[in-house]
Amino acid sequence: MKIKALIGGLAALLIAQAALANEARVAKAVEPVLVELFGPGVKPDAVRKLNNFNLYEIQIGGDLLYTDERVSYLINGDILDIKNKKNLTEERKQKLAQVKFSDLPLDLAVKQVRGNGKRVLVTFEDPNCSYCRKLAKELQSVNNVTVYTFLYPILSPDSTEKSKNIWCAPDRAKAWNDLMIDGKQPASANCNHPTERVGALGRKLNIRGTPAMIFADGTRIPGFMPAAMLERALDRGSANVH
Image 1 (cartoon, rainbow, N blue to C red):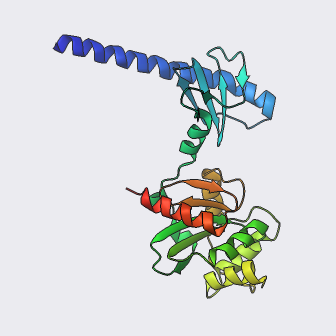
Image 2 (cartoon, rainbow, N blue to C red):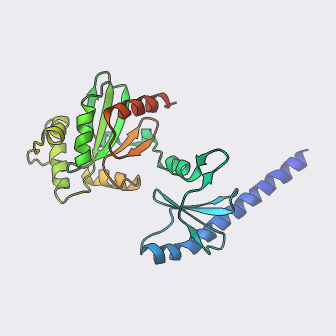
Image 3 (tube, rainbow, N blue to C red):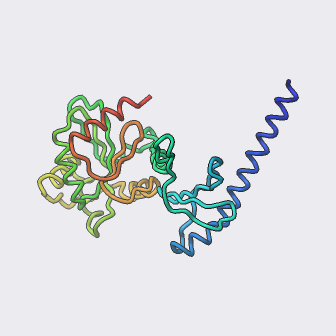
């Protein structure tokens, strides 16, 4: 029995090593194809073999493509599980978008506590973002939440200056709400600010637009969400934390 178990373990190890070798080979072969199709600098972040489909999944940021072992074609589309009525591609994207909440550097964010603050929400927002202004207004009616807002200036030339002024204000939360809700521009200020570090964090998390929201269970949702939906998402995020 021990010999059979040893042989089985060695066989599994060899199969795993072969799969890794094939993934590495596909990754190398697909890179010039991606550059040709999408331009310089486009590289696969990861390549994974999908044994059930005899395909290879190519991850580029938050996007997924598929190819065969010889990289003779690329598939840009979703894989649908008809029997179980599931979009496997979308499920995979959601899994890849998950964020380990405890790893977020919350000290680099503007903090607001409403009510008991038990539920937690992280947002990435640009001070010139119109939908961020709508989100700020919706949040006024959401209670018992702690909101951490990363100032993520990506939309306009003066977004960085506004972000710096908000961060350097005596009351950051007030300066943020004055701008987003009342349209009051923050006073010019200067201090040590984390704008570059927040920018690097956003790029690492592949956040391409604002607002972007992350809930306590690591679920990420891009875009604006009205108060009623926010309430449900906050409750769900809190309930799913283990």
